[in-house]
Length: 243
Image (cartoon, rainbow, N blue to C red):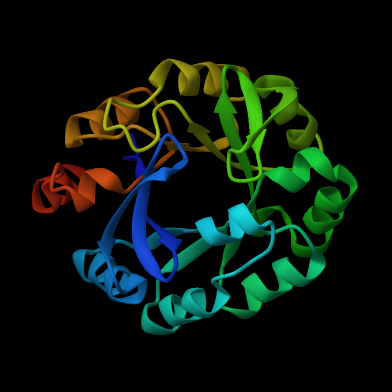
């Protein structure tokens, strides 16, 4: 069986590499001053994928840190997906011009579904990741500041029918807590939509969590805080992944 795809995360606020707890901007921990340096270190460890989140952009409702994205994509050969604040044609164009291979879009899919569908047609499903940030079973938007009335599974069905193949699902109550991922939720999604390329996000605290997600058949996982806090032994992780 193919091993789960490993995707480290870099979240950016005010030019620094940070992590939030449960999406709360008041519960912010700054880990490093240079996101580009962190990205290069991930590449040197053997990672080929990277998830970058513009938290300033998510809060401001437009891209803020595209220059830092360019620094990251210029410094590495990693496949970078970028999200946070992508709300307009100008935003998505700036993200791709800054070197993003893919973009993660969530709020627009709720608030402007026609625009999201147009982007899906214009850029292709392989370059679009549908962001599904979940709280109490419903999708949250705008940097997790607002909850919608859209239930998760029908929301996914709508866009799968339009051609979406990649979904990044974050259980907000788990994110940044190191309390373990919402494996039951991800299994429910995969059981309902088995052909979906699901990227699990939130709560990963150890290599054991990654093994559990792998054993559950989840295609990919994003993780960040466990790396920055030394909870994951990278050599041990790669030994397992390559075995």
